Amino acid sequence: MDAQKVISSGIIELYVAGMATEPEVREVEAAIIQYPEVLAAVEEYRKSLEYYVAAQVLPPDNAIKASLLNQINNLEATDTEQTVLSSNMPERPKATLMEETLIQEKRLSWKVVAAAAFVLLIGSVIMNFFYYKKWKDFREYKDKYQALVLSQNSIQSTNDKYRARLDELEQTLNVMEDPAVLKVNMPGTKLKPDAVATVFWNTQNKQVYLKVNNLPEPAADKQYQLWAIVDGKPVDMGVFEMGDTAKLLQKMKVTDKVQMFAVTLENKGGAAQPTLEQMYVAGKLPG
Image (tube, rainbow, N blue to C red):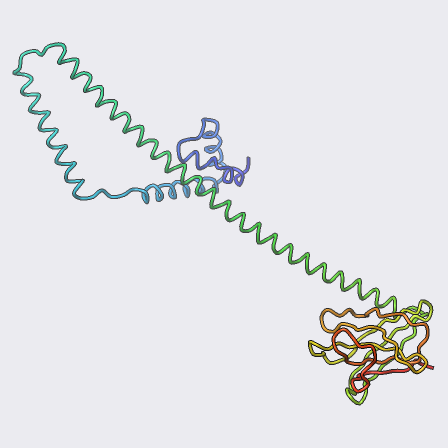
């Protein structure tokens, strides 16, 4: 086992607390000789344990301390007096001696219980410190893991957005480069001279696509609508989106024949007939 495994295994804590088995003791002591970092970890944990135990010790109240000292002094004086008196007293009956023996045994039992309780207290402090350290390490690892998961999810979400955008761009290029597709430029009208939009009309399947080059963002209750002029009459080709939700190339309706295309600004949802005063762009088919 290398140094890092010894340090992270928890055997050092048991070794310092005196709770390690003989094979574990031999393993730690061999690692101390072989690896300086293990020795450093043992010393660090021993100091930490000493600090922790010292922090748990509560200083006795001065009044209680004085009372206990007085009681100890009184007991010592009483024991001395009893020793002098017993030397001058006649031999007691056996029953009295048996009672004293029982009393002494009770006192001895109380001392044993007190010593055992003290040992258990120290053991509890050591184990609490050990498990607290493990719990703290677990919290640190958990926080790092959660941060890593959040970072991974964010990266995955960004990758998904880029992939979707690339797929959309590829589809746009396929439509624009198709030999059967006719490109129709729609420059701005007097209402908005710098406005520009482009229509791509597939002359085989009659599908119409729209690319918004430059159109002002409409009001919340307004929406742009594409029209096809067929035999001098406007034909609705559908409304389209603007802003971040808009695709590079928006799929509109189908038309069999057309002489020109135009875009007007209508109430949200579109209109049955175009509002000519709100025509932003228009363009005839080439040729």
